[in-house]
Length: 517
Ligand code: UN1
Image (cartoon, rainbow, N blue to C red):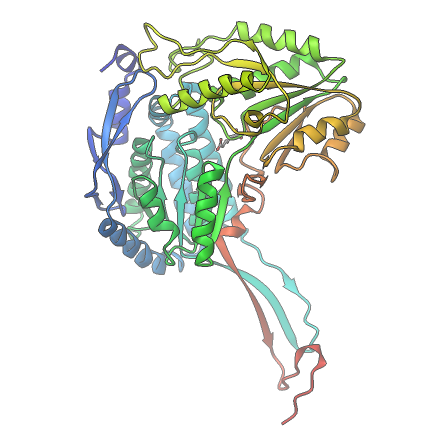
């Protein structure tokens, strides 16, 4: 074990979470199994192996689906507020285990400990939200056009929800989905990223205990592990009516077509290419904080990370100097040390993607103004630590159009009015998050109007990342169109049924059609 891991008492955290050196990566709740090859979970923090997790074979998968189907028959009959009570208990367990789980998230994924704790907090928040929601799964009552008829709608659970999550938010995105799906009466099968399998086991252990303590059937929460082949078992499986997938646009297109082929539902939360527009009326101090956190927080590995800064020409030099100066203050290193701002990328492939972006932007005519580079030497043995970089670029560059999951920020210039900035901002295929920095009401409202940002998230005087759970989260265009988390995102986890009841002795037909026998 490395000095870093020792100092951070990782072993204690693993013990508290019940994860071991070798873990069975398939679980129906009471039973853990997994007969497939092992995945090695290693930490990008120090390059050390944390543990191994066995993957899910086709037979294992069928066993999981059978347990989930059985559990659904029971779970769907429980009153929704009772399901909410179970989610409340899950939230309490997360409160109790916030520190060890936050530590494991940080160590396995490489984000700062503060962000690891923040991620567990998002899980707790969505549990609280779901508990309230369990008493609010409302449908509407409509007026029938026929006398003596009553029409209303109700929402029923779908059945099995398949969740495919990404490495960058290894636990929160699962919780957004699963906490809502559970109160809706669904059961879940989760495939975490093969880059962060251990946090998945830790979460499954937490919920399995809650379900057991409540004498609930196993199978309400299930876990599978493996690469895209295990994902494909889920996406092609008619027994799984909804697939919620988070990841790249490339992956999302494959998921959408597989699920679409069988007319299943998919909830897609895919790539972003998020911009902050900085207008002549922007507060520079706020702009710098928003832009720098957005670009380098989580080492640029959020789907909401700020990739483009679109600055008015009258402010350009000022903003450029302020942001470049701020980058000079950044400390890169062990993310478990609170003094550091930027931790490692997830793995060496991500480092390659980062290097490629910096080469490409220069090839296309851009100019690097904050040099990047891979850090070497003591503390950087994992080979995953990179320097956050900034390049002046054009929106039309191929590399600027592409989402690179790394701390590379492109500076773009606009002139004239805010419409010109919006043309740039909307001029990419992705449509997740967007922001404007301005104290000008007209510009702000225009940005939010129908002619403004085309993204699922549009913020004023806030950066692009760090959304709260209360709003619906997701985006348009190549981001996939899905909405998770707050607002009425719960509706995708349920099927809507329209019910019309005739309490007369006649049988009038709708639209006044006569059909007399
Ligand atoms: C993601 O990167 O997939 O808004 C999710 C944010 C976080 C969630 C990001 N609350 O940045």
